[in-house]
Image 1: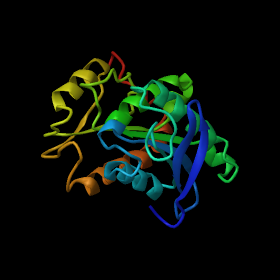
Image 2 (image 1 turned 60 degrees about the vertical axis):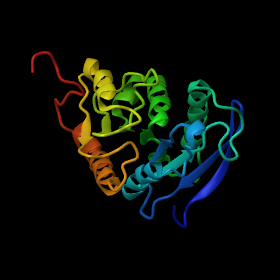
Image 3 (image 1 turned 180 degrees about the horizontal axis):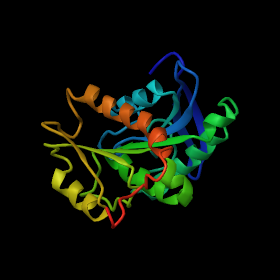
Length: 230
């Protein structure tokens, strides 16, 4: 990613977790976690959508943890259909929040992003966060794998981005998942599952979401979800 990228082996439930840590060129404002697509179909932490998400976070001052899922790279274990992968992400998150090289104030500020299968696993991580933290953390889900997996409900402030002509996860499946939550979905016209030739646009949307999150949280009386009286 950049000159400040380092690789770590973090202890996990099934053995070592292979993690790349990207540090921003500006003062660190927070820590973030990015989850990659399905490992049995070539998904790794170096996927171009994952790296685009990481670059957006770096641009806004986040230090980024990009783990490989089980069986990928030097990460121990075998694919566990999202169960063990969730445990692994929780272990990586705990390690990131305890990293003494990151300023304490930055460790208290968190952002989470996932792509495809990674969005499913990340939704499970979000569901495990304490309620107060869950409402405050910027969450970004791209190419949500809503057709193939039981993606959890997410906070109303979550940014969901999907390609109009996604041939891996049909847009209709994502809308069906989002509709009961009254959750907006940002649709990129003409974009496919891997956002070919649309990565710059994807990055801009994520950067805007990250920059807006603390501003929205500071607006008095602005509820995280629409009320029935609106």
